[in-house]
Image 1 (tube, rainbow, N blue to C red):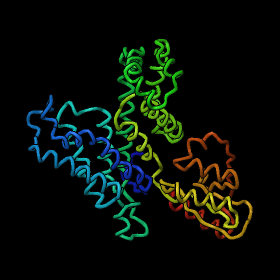
Image 2 (cartoon, rainbow, N blue to C red; image 1 turned 120 degrees about the vertical axis):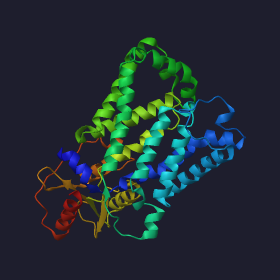
Image 3 (cartoon, rainbow, N blue to C red; image 1 turned 60 degrees about the horizontal axis):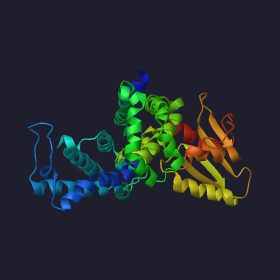
Image 4 (cartoon, rainbow, N blue to C red; image 1 turned 180 degrees about the horizontal axis):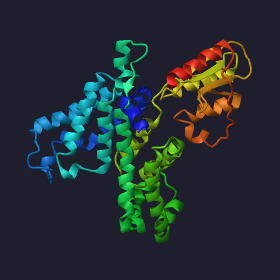
Amino acid sequence: MRTLQRWLDGTGDLRALVPLRIAAGPLVLLHLRPFLADAIDGRIYADTFWQPYASWYPELPRAGYVALLWVTAVAAVALSAGLFTRVVAIVTAAGVAYNLFLSQTHFHHNRAFLLIVLIGLAVLPVGRWGSVDAMLRRRAVPAPAPLWPLGLLRFEVAVAYWASGLSKLIDGDWWGGLVTRLRIEQYGDLAASRGVPDWMLEIAGNAGFHWWFAKVVVLTELAIGVGLFWRRTRLVSVWLAIGFHLAIEAFADVQVFSLAGLAALVIWVTPRSGDRILTVHTGNRSARRLAAAVRWLDWTGRFTVTTAGGTGRPAATLIDRPGADGTPVIRTGRDAVVMVLRRLPVTFWAAALVPIRTERRRPPSSTGEVRAAASVEGVGG
């Protein structure tokens, strides 16, 4: 109950969602591409078989429907740029939703997943960071955002894995491997065109392989959905999710689901930013390169990078979030570099395999370290 209350009343920094907002535009364009291509050729959904969800669902005139598709596409581009973010996020979500529920033939679960993500972006104030809106406001420190919409989005995304895994668990054809074998037969040529080795396709064509493989798929989905909710298992679940989405992208045609699922993983980043203090010596070339890499690759805003003169040792010092005892965790040298790589979106999956030694010290004595530690504690809450 305390955790629920903290999410309902709490506020935080949602800078980590900037990559998701930027990715949303290309994802929507990819989703709308077949509809726009048909519209350019003079065809819309009404020219082929379609089945409305309800008789009362409003239908736009042909010109109005085509205009809606293009308005949604333009709004998606503006969403990525962060221009009039709240308005274009609502327009994008509404346009995708209208088209999705216009006909039962439009509905796919992967498209529904994209809509869930878009609704989350429409509710969350994601334009306060890394956007044209933020540049125009010129506000040094954006106001904290309420966390309950982020908690709701996390729940909805996790439920997608639960529902998919549970439905496969109780489906005899799925659990027994029949569905995965038919999928490989259907999309084998597609997998080969995407670079899947022949020996792997040969193994995947064995019926006995699918008896085991189907169970791995089902249990993986369930493990992802459950593990994402606990901090101790979250990193493992993110690892599983990355492998899961890459695998189904290679072996099946799931439209935007895999790409949306990978982009949506940033919602599980702790809603605090800049609370890890990295100090590097400017006289050390490797340290300067590390600082530059962090500034370019820290897409979720985890680090505050500071510099110190000279070529002192260690070349890099990282003051991490306070541990369970409330004191900052200080890492130096190689351990600092490994921990930095573990927190960058591009490198975390590989750096997690590198062992690290955790050092817990009493609050630092120097003025600079005291100031940095206080900053960590202040942001961390």
